[in-house]
Image 1 (cartoon, helix red, strand yellow):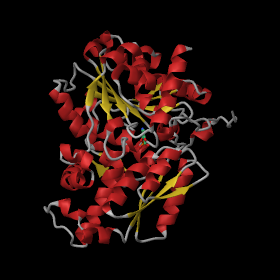
Image 2 (cartoon, rainbow, N blue to C red):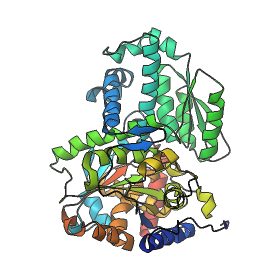
Image 3 (cartoon, protein in one colour):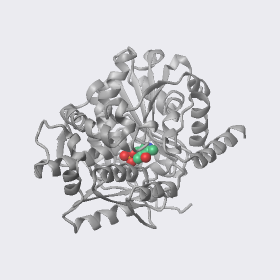
Length: 463
Ligand SMILES: *Cc1c(COP(=O)(O)O)cnc(C)c1O
């Protein structure tokens, strides 16, 4: 492992307890040891308005994103027959996971395990169906309104007609991706008639590229990592006024698309009689790459449930970009956008959806006072949990999507986790706690690939 120069990343003025916790986390993350860090800046009462880049966002923006999905639902039902039974909604089930809970060793005294099943989201087969599709729809809506193809209040299903497709074909939608965002943007953009280009990093899986090419999407392969693929795409798009670049490191439209998930989850929890409150805390474990998806969802949930929801991001031990961002920039107060390479890590992980060296500053800024913490997971653990999710609950997830399953143990068994529960007065309420692992992708993983994942998990469990 290359040895990066240690540099002080924690602000010396913060209180000793916080400084010690940050130093412990930093030591563990440098060593590649799984760890949990909790956020000392977490607000007791979350702010209703949060600054995100150069905008201020609130619950109204979450509702606006949801309303956009609703306006487009008739069109989606027409373009994607698999969504017709649900009227064109892109949503996933909330699943009880009692058997997996046992396998993971989560004692009932610490609450119950649930799964938010975004591994099965239609169209994209991953959580990217939320943010990615939202941004393509927002762009299509703008083009269509400007061209007079639709008026406010029209049935958007007519955007599947030849005149609309003809107009859309003048534009290109481009994106940089490790795979899943490209799948979401590429499939949605080409279904509407846009030209689509996806800049893929070296970690992108061959089957994801093949699936895109089969849909007529231009796949541009880059030898570098995810951040380099994004930079290349951004640069190419800047010179073309007919190109809309979906910027995963900076896009508010993406983040707000993800945030709409909170509203549907609220309905699902209510249907189970499980609305979070002072006696029933909700802990949410969200796999994190650049941070846009988990930050969007955490933002939406914090607006709905305030201090009764606790959002933790999960990252691979080799790619904890959000953790280094929070430790170095948010907490250290030095600003900037550190990378995992600065901490001597190599960003090599089988969790390709999370193989990101540098966090989104937009997401990190929005999470400053809303995020409860970040923990890291070793790749081997991802494979064990991937296998157990299949064995216990019959669900197919990809390695990235298994990162949430380590959350309950991290929270209830580690010193940092127990300390968090104690300090927030949550220990006594744990029997009623809801632990929600967000499974973020897997539906379209090819059979042979998935078999290999299962075999690897089984072998690790047998060892
Ligand atoms: C992209 C992705 C995530 C995380 O989303 P970010 O916005 O990159 O943080 C999690 N899981 C899977 C499977 C993904 O593809």
